[in-house]
Length: 139
Image (tube, rainbow, N blue to C red; front, side, top):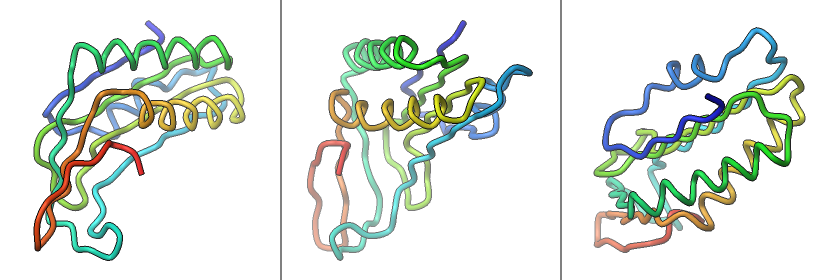
């Protein structure tokens, strides 16, 4: 199996994700770890809430993974995204990519996270000290 895709309310185990993509023939592993930051546009963030249209989100992520595998010589690709309430410092998303050479791993990883944020139906609500707002899960 070349890909592992998961949307879950469970805490993401970063080391387990990295271990899953590691292979003896992998010369490069690139990992993107998205974290909940403490401020957005000068406002203090108390927490984030993520929701997903899971069936459609999984299908979209599978398409992104297939595109990355077709475009770069990737050996393994992992995409995990959390849903639910996350505190500052929590990890809502991890992308891990292994390839024989670092360029393919870097480029595929960047493509996956950028495309995921543009096309996958995952939404976040930012909760501030003075209110809240629903936003797309991209900047």
